[in-house]
Amino acid sequence: MTVLTPLEIDGAATLLARLARVIDTHTDGPGDFATAIDGLTFFRREAPASPTICMVEPSIVLVAQGAKQLWLGGQAYLYDTSRFLITSLELPADSEVVMASAKAPCVGLTLKLDLRIVTDLISQGNYLPRRDRASGASIGIGDATPTILRPFDRLLSLLDEPEAISTLAPLIQREIHYRVLTSDQAPKLHQIASVGGQGYRIAKAIDWLKLNYALPLRVEELATHVQMSMPTFNQHFRQLTAMSPLQYQKWLRLTQARRLMLNEHLDVSRAAFKVGYESPSQFSREYNRLFGIPPKRDIAALRGMHEQSEKK
Image 1: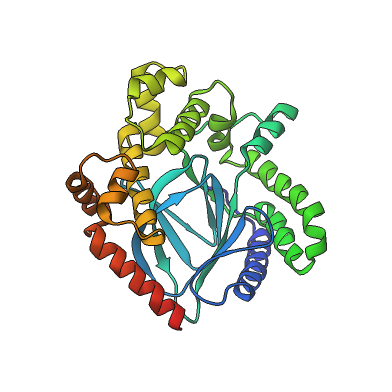
Image 2: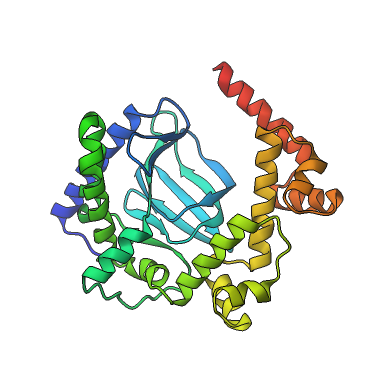
Protein backbone atom coordinates (compact mmCIF):
# COMPACT_ATOMS: atom_id res chain seq x y z
CA MET A 1 0.00 0.00 0.00
CA THR A 2 1.21 3.51 -0.81
CA VAL A 3 2.68 5.45 2.14
CA LEU A 4 1.32 9.01 2.20
CA THR A 5 3.24 12.02 3.46
CA PRO A 6 1.64 14.22 6.18
CA LEU A 7 0.86 16.85 3.53
CA GLU A 8 -0.87 14.27 1.34
CA ILE A 9 -2.88 12.97 4.31
CA ASP A 10 -4.07 16.50 5.10
CA GLY A 11 -4.89 17.01 1.44
CA ALA A 12 -6.91 13.79 1.29
CA ALA A 13 -8.80 14.64 4.49
CA THR A 14 -9.73 18.08 3.18
CA LEU A 15 -10.89 16.69 -0.15
CA LEU A 16 -12.94 13.92 1.50
CA ALA A 17 -14.62 16.42 3.83
CA ARG A 18 -15.57 18.53 0.82
CA LEU A 19 -16.92 15.49 -1.06
CA ALA A 20 -18.92 14.45 2.02
CA ARG A 21 -20.53 17.90 2.28
CA VAL A 22 -21.58 17.88 -1.38
CA ILE A 23 -23.00 14.36 -1.14
CA ASP A 24 -24.81 15.23 2.09
CA THR A 25 -26.44 18.19 0.34
CA HIS A 26 -27.73 15.99 -2.50
CA THR A 27 -29.02 13.07 -0.39
CA ASP A 28 -32.10 13.59 1.76
CA GLY A 29 -32.10 10.19 3.47
CA PRO A 30 -30.82 6.62 3.13
CA GLY A 31 -30.69 5.35 -0.44
CA ASP A 32 -29.03 5.75 -3.82
CA PHE A 33 -29.38 8.99 -5.77
CA ALA A 34 -28.79 9.79 -9.42
CA THR A 35 -27.10 13.09 -10.28
CA ALA A 36 -27.13 15.43 -13.26
CA ILE A 37 -23.77 13.97 -14.29
CA ASP A 38 -24.06 10.87 -16.47
CA GLY A 39 -22.77 7.75 -14.72
CA LEU A 40 -22.40 9.41 -11.30
CA THR A 41 -24.59 8.37 -8.37
CA PHE A 42 -24.46 9.10 -4.63
CA PHE A 43 -25.27 6.75 -1.76
CA ARG A 44 -26.16 7.36 1.86
CA ARG A 45 -26.56 4.81 4.66
CA GLU A 46 -27.43 5.77 8.24
CA ALA A 47 -26.86 2.45 10.04
CA PRO A 48 -24.66 -0.62 9.67
CA ALA A 49 -26.31 -3.33 7.58
CA SER A 50 -25.59 -6.98 6.92
CA PRO A 51 -24.63 -8.03 3.38
CA THR A 52 -27.34 -7.64 0.74
CA ILE A 53 -27.28 -9.00 -2.81
CA CYS A 54 -26.50 -6.50 -5.55
CA MET A 55 -25.17 -6.23 -9.08
CA VAL A 56 -21.97 -4.20 -9.25
CA GLU A 57 -21.28 -2.53 -12.59
CA PRO A 58 -17.78 -1.68 -13.85
CA SER A 59 -17.18 1.32 -11.63
CA ILE A 60 -15.14 3.21 -9.07
CA VAL A 61 -16.71 3.57 -5.63
CA LEU A 62 -15.45 6.22 -3.20
CA VAL A 63 -16.50 6.51 0.43
CA ALA A 64 -16.27 10.08 1.74
CA GLN A 65 -17.43 9.12 5.25
CA GLY A 66 -17.96 5.76 6.94
CA ALA A 67 -17.05 2.35 5.57
CA LYS A 68 -18.51 -0.40 3.38
CA GLN A 69 -17.48 -3.91 2.41
CA LEU A 70 -18.12 -5.99 -0.69
CA TRP A 71 -18.18 -9.78 -0.59
CA LEU A 72 -17.32 -11.81 -3.68
CA GLY A 73 -16.64 -15.52 -3.68
CA GLY A 74 -16.20 -15.59 0.08
CA GLN A 75 -13.59 -12.81 0.02
CA ALA A 76 -14.21 -9.44 1.67
CA TYR A 77 -13.12 -6.13 0.13
CA LEU A 78 -13.23 -3.33 2.71
CA TYR A 79 -13.29 0.22 1.40
CA ASP A 80 -13.48 3.43 3.37
CA THR A 81 -12.07 6.96 3.33
CA SER A 82 -8.56 5.68 2.65
CA ARG A 83 -9.38 3.06 0.00
CA PHE A 84 -11.60 3.01 -3.08
CA LEU A 85 -13.26 0.02 -4.71
CA ILE A 86 -12.89 -0.72 -8.40
CA THR A 87 -14.67 -3.35 -10.48
CA SER A 88 -13.99 -3.99 -14.15
CA LEU A 89 -16.83 -6.47 -14.86
CA GLU A 90 -20.53 -6.58 -14.02
CA LEU A 91 -20.55 -8.81 -10.96
CA PRO A 92 -23.13 -10.27 -8.58
CA ALA A 93 -21.87 -9.58 -5.07
CA ASP A 94 -22.97 -8.82 -1.51
CA SER A 95 -22.69 -5.26 -0.21
CA GLU A 96 -22.32 -4.59 3.52
CA VAL A 97 -22.41 -1.31 5.45
CA VAL A 98 -19.69 -1.51 8.09
CA MET A 99 -19.65 1.98 9.63
CA ALA A 100 -22.61 4.38 9.58
CA SER A 101 -24.94 6.25 11.92
CA ALA A 102 -27.63 8.91 11.70
CA LYS A 103 -25.16 11.54 12.95
CA ALA A 104 -22.27 10.31 10.82
CA PRO A 105 -23.81 8.53 7.81
CA CYS A 106 -21.84 6.48 5.37
CA VAL A 107 -21.83 8.62 2.23
CA GLY A 108 -20.02 8.19 -1.05
CA LEU A 109 -20.24 8.01 -4.78
CA THR A 110 -20.17 5.54 -7.64
CA LEU A 111 -18.81 6.46 -11.05
CA LYS A 112 -19.40 4.03 -13.90
CA LEU A 113 -16.26 3.13 -15.81
CA ASP A 114 -16.30 3.69 -19.55
CA LEU A 115 -14.13 0.97 -21.06
CA ARG A 116 -14.15 2.87 -24.37
CA ILE A 117 -12.23 5.66 -22.64
CA VAL A 118 -9.86 3.12 -21.11
CA THR A 119 -9.20 1.52 -24.50
CA ASP A 120 -8.67 4.91 -26.10
CA LEU A 121 -6.22 5.99 -23.40
CA ILE A 122 -4.29 2.74 -23.65
CA SER A 123 -4.05 3.08 -27.43
CA GLN A 124 -2.74 6.64 -27.15
CA GLY A 125 -0.26 6.20 -24.33
CA ASN A 126 2.29 3.81 -22.92
CA TYR A 127 0.38 2.66 -19.85
CA LEU A 128 2.16 -0.53 -18.96
CA PRO A 129 0.33 -2.23 -16.09
CA ARG A 130 2.36 -2.99 -13.01
CA ARG A 131 2.66 -6.61 -12.01
CA ASP A 132 -0.65 -7.58 -10.47
CA ARG A 133 -0.18 -9.47 -7.24
CA ALA A 134 -3.87 -10.30 -6.99
CA SER A 135 -5.46 -13.54 -8.13
CA GLY A 136 -6.78 -12.00 -11.32
CA ALA A 137 -10.24 -11.17 -9.94
CA SER A 138 -11.93 -8.22 -11.61
CA ILE A 139 -12.34 -6.38 -8.31
CA GLY A 140 -9.73 -4.50 -6.35
CA ILE A 141 -9.00 -1.95 -3.64
CA GLY A 142 -6.86 1.12 -4.37
CA ASP A 143 -5.45 3.95 -2.27
CA ALA A 144 -7.68 7.04 -2.16
CA THR A 145 -4.82 9.47 -2.69
CA PRO A 146 -5.20 13.21 -3.36
CA THR A 147 -4.27 12.46 -6.98
CA ILE A 148 -7.38 10.29 -7.28
CA LEU A 149 -9.61 12.54 -5.15
CA ARG A 150 -8.90 15.90 -6.83
CA PRO A 151 -10.68 15.21 -10.13
CA PHE A 152 -13.66 13.83 -8.21
CA ASP A 153 -13.73 17.07 -6.22
CA ARG A 154 -13.83 19.06 -9.47
CA LEU A 155 -16.48 16.75 -10.93
CA LEU A 156 -18.82 17.22 -7.97
CA SER A 157 -18.31 20.99 -8.03
CA LEU A 158 -20.00 21.00 -11.45
CA LEU A 159 -23.31 20.19 -9.74
CA ASP A 160 -23.35 23.87 -8.72
CA GLU A 161 -22.62 24.86 -12.31
CA PRO A 162 -25.09 22.76 -14.33
CA GLU A 163 -24.53 24.68 -17.58
CA ALA A 164 -20.90 23.49 -17.56
CA ILE A 165 -21.62 19.78 -17.03
CA SER A 166 -22.01 18.78 -20.69
CA THR A 167 -18.68 20.40 -21.60
CA LEU A 168 -16.47 19.80 -18.57
CA ALA A 169 -17.73 16.55 -17.03
CA PRO A 170 -16.47 14.33 -19.91
CA LEU A 171 -13.02 15.91 -19.61
CA ILE A 172 -12.84 15.32 -15.87
CA GLN A 173 -14.17 11.77 -16.21
CA ARG A 174 -11.45 11.09 -18.76
CA GLU A 175 -8.86 12.35 -16.28
CA ILE A 176 -10.26 10.02 -13.59
CA HIS A 177 -9.85 7.07 -15.96
CA TYR A 178 -6.29 8.23 -16.66
CA ARG A 179 -5.50 8.43 -12.93
CA VAL A 180 -6.73 4.88 -12.39
CA LEU A 181 -4.66 3.70 -15.37
CA THR A 182 -1.57 5.17 -13.73
CA SER A 183 -2.40 3.72 -10.30
CA ASP A 184 -1.79 0.29 -8.80
CA GLN A 185 -5.27 -0.75 -10.01
CA ALA A 186 -4.35 -0.42 -13.71
CA PRO A 187 -4.18 -4.22 -14.25
CA LYS A 188 -7.91 -4.49 -13.54
CA LEU A 189 -8.62 -2.26 -16.52
CA HIS A 190 -5.95 -3.66 -18.80
CA GLN A 191 -7.25 -7.21 -18.51
CA ILE A 192 -10.72 -6.15 -19.68
CA ALA A 193 -9.81 -3.45 -22.20
CA SER A 194 -7.12 -5.41 -24.03
CA VAL A 195 -8.95 -6.62 -27.15
CA GLY A 196 -8.37 -10.32 -27.68
CA GLY A 197 -7.26 -10.89 -24.09
CA GLN A 198 -8.93 -13.41 -21.82
CA GLY A 199 -10.58 -10.74 -19.66
CA TYR A 200 -12.00 -9.02 -22.73
CA ARG A 201 -13.49 -12.31 -23.93
CA ILE A 202 -15.06 -13.03 -20.55
CA ALA A 203 -16.61 -9.55 -20.64
CA LYS A 204 -18.12 -10.42 -24.03
CA ALA A 205 -19.48 -13.67 -22.60
CA ILE A 206 -21.10 -11.73 -19.74
CA ASP A 207 -22.68 -9.35 -22.26
CA TRP A 208 -24.17 -12.38 -24.05
CA LEU A 209 -25.48 -13.85 -20.80
CA LYS A 210 -27.16 -10.58 -19.84
CA LEU A 211 -29.01 -10.48 -23.16
CA ASN A 212 -29.89 -14.19 -23.29
CA TYR A 213 -30.26 -15.28 -19.66
CA ALA A 214 -33.69 -16.83 -20.33
CA LEU A 215 -32.33 -19.18 -23.01
CA PRO A 216 -30.85 -22.62 -22.27
CA LEU A 217 -27.13 -22.20 -21.67
CA ARG A 218 -24.68 -24.45 -23.46
CA VAL A 219 -21.34 -23.49 -22.00
CA GLU A 220 -19.40 -25.12 -24.84
CA GLU A 221 -21.19 -22.94 -27.39
CA LEU A 222 -20.61 -19.80 -25.33
CA ALA A 223 -16.91 -20.61 -25.05
CA THR A 224 -16.76 -21.08 -28.82
CA HIS A 225 -18.66 -17.82 -29.31
CA VAL A 226 -15.90 -15.90 -27.49
CA GLN A 227 -13.15 -17.97 -29.13
CA MET A 228 -11.92 -19.83 -26.04
CA SER A 229 -11.47 -23.48 -25.23
CA MET A 230 -13.78 -24.92 -22.59
CA PRO A 231 -11.08 -25.40 -19.90
CA THR A 232 -9.67 -21.90 -20.45
CA PHE A 233 -13.12 -20.32 -20.55
CA ASN A 234 -14.26 -21.97 -17.31
CA GLN A 235 -10.98 -21.18 -15.56
CA HIS A 236 -10.95 -17.48 -16.45
CA PHE A 237 -14.69 -16.99 -15.96
CA ARG A 238 -14.47 -18.32 -12.41
CA GLN A 239 -11.24 -16.42 -11.74
CA LEU A 240 -12.79 -13.10 -12.77
CA THR A 241 -16.31 -13.53 -11.37
CA ALA A 242 -15.88 -16.06 -8.52
CA MET A 243 -18.63 -18.22 -10.06
CA SER A 244 -19.29 -20.53 -13.00
CA PRO A 245 -21.19 -19.41 -16.15
CA LEU A 246 -24.21 -21.46 -15.04
CA GLN A 247 -24.17 -19.84 -11.60
CA TYR A 248 -23.94 -16.40 -13.21
CA GLN A 249 -26.93 -17.18 -15.44
CA LYS A 250 -28.89 -18.44 -12.43
CA TRP A 251 -28.15 -15.20 -10.56
CA LEU A 252 -29.35 -13.15 -13.54
CA ARG A 253 -32.55 -15.18 -13.83
CA LEU A 254 -33.43 -14.95 -10.14
CA THR A 255 -32.75 -11.23 -9.77
CA GLN A 256 -34.71 -10.48 -12.95
CA ALA A 257 -37.61 -12.59 -11.66
CA ARG A 258 -37.49 -10.64 -8.40
CA ARG A 259 -37.78 -7.39 -10.36
CA LEU A 260 -40.70 -8.74 -12.41
CA MET A 261 -42.61 -9.82 -9.30
CA LEU A 262 -41.93 -6.57 -7.48
CA ASN A 263 -42.39 -4.01 -10.25
CA GLU A 264 -44.65 -5.75 -12.76
CA HIS A 265 -46.67 -7.77 -10.22
CA LEU A 266 -46.10 -11.15 -11.90
CA ASP A 267 -46.92 -14.15 -9.74
CA VAL A 268 -44.25 -16.73 -8.92
CA SER A 269 -45.08 -19.14 -11.75
CA ARG A 270 -45.25 -16.49 -14.46
CA ALA A 271 -42.00 -14.89 -13.30
CA ALA A 272 -40.28 -18.29 -13.24
CA PHE A 273 -41.34 -19.14 -16.79
CA LYS A 274 -40.53 -15.64 -18.01
CA VAL A 275 -36.86 -15.93 -16.98
CA GLY A 276 -36.37 -19.43 -18.37
CA TYR A 277 -37.31 -21.85 -15.60
CA GLU A 278 -39.38 -24.89 -16.58
CA SER A 279 -40.35 -25.72 -13.00
CA PRO A 280 -41.78 -23.13 -10.57
CA SER A 281 -40.88 -25.40 -7.66
CA GLN A 282 -37.22 -25.49 -8.74
CA PHE A 283 -37.36 -21.72 -9.15
CA SER A 284 -38.72 -21.29 -5.61
CA ARG A 285 -36.01 -23.56 -4.15
CA GLU A 286 -33.21 -21.67 -5.89
CA TYR A 287 -34.76 -18.30 -5.06
CA ASN A 288 -34.93 -19.28 -1.38
CA ARG A 289 -31.31 -20.45 -1.53
CA LEU A 290 -30.11 -17.14 -2.99
CA PHE A 291 -32.23 -14.62 -1.08
CA GLY A 292 -32.77 -16.64 2.09
CA ILE A 293 -36.56 -16.37 1.90
CA PRO A 294 -39.32 -17.82 -0.36
CA PRO A 295 -40.33 -15.53 -3.25
CA LYS A 296 -43.86 -14.67 -2.03
CA ARG A 297 -42.64 -13.67 1.43
CA ASP A 298 -39.70 -11.76 -0.01
CA ILE A 299 -41.83 -9.67 -2.37
CA ALA A 300 -44.38 -8.98 0.39
CA ALA A 301 -41.59 -7.81 2.69
CA LEU A 302 -40.04 -5.60 0.00
CA ARG A 303 -43.40 -3.99 -0.76
CA GLY A 304 -43.96 -3.38 2.93
CA MET A 305 -40.59 -1.66 3.25
CA HIS A 306 -41.37 0.48 0.20
CA GLU A 307 -44.74 1.54 1.63
CA GLN A 308 -43.13 2.47 4.96
CA SER A 309 -40.46 4.59 3.25
CA GLU A 310 -43.16 6.44 1.27
CA LYS A 311 -45.04 7.31 4.47
CA LYS A 312 -41.98 8.96 6.04
